Image (tube, rainbow, N blue to C red):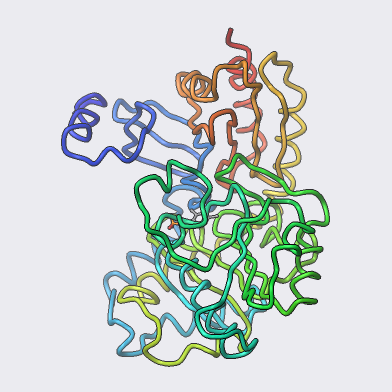
Length: 400
Ligand SMILES: *Cc1c(COP(=O)(O)O)cnc(C)c1O
């Protein structure tokens, strides 16, 4: 079958909740993707950072194959021999005392919100069902009804109400605005250290540190959603580390499985995570041995292959080179590590046509919001590959 045949099937039989580029990927290896006609592309999206380790990483593949042949799912009614090892390795790598595994990122966000509410009632003494959680304008935390409750993107919310009470939206990057929104009933502040889906928005320097202090002063939990920024993407294990901040709860997903399988987790110390008691929360697939074995291998690859250092060094290089590109369309280049946004001027006619121009040249990415091109290749990328891509990017950023 050809590209147009696949697309026609999808058009006819699939829900139209996406608007993908006209490319059908059939194979991936490292930073490269191949379409139905065998054309090669550099992946600059990395499945929104789920494939930080590169496509079909052989080591993670091996872990998947070995574990899939042994045991895949027991439910949490029984223990399995992979999850305890994942717990220990997550602890050793992150320093958090405990973790709770789920599947999708959204589920981990929901888990953190439940836990924050429970903490508010049981520890902080907020009257039952009065807990408030402060979120930020421009956030993206997933698609469940509760999570889109506090999205300010009309597209994500329209027609999906009624919504969940107990959430407040404050401006992003503005610590005093968060402080002003805190009341005695505030359980937590939920924040992305960098807003990826909002167009790679970096808050002002010191923002997270200030938030951390404010949360401490007011006895409010700081929850960092590092589903996209975490596990090396920004040149640190967690983006919070750039400001020396250790959030009370940290949410990870995406690259936790290197793109093989949905695995997410909430990390916290025992004083918080210990509040969950048996039966209060769970998931049939969460913490299953297949997912746990994959996550263990995915974490190991990040460490062994020094992907965090690579993201830091090559991210800096990539940004330097992008800044040098003369273009009538570029308003700003910004980013941290290999999480890079090129913001185009409003007159440029939207980022989509630039993504389509890059696609012709063998580079795949997606416009992020209307005017931002996000460059976020797998963290296994090499300098030579960036050098290969730069002339193509230069050309695309200069189309009329
Ligand atoms: C992708 C993402 C989510 C949602 O994860 P899913 O696995 O799609 O449910 C939540 N928060 C952030 C910051 C994300 O990038």
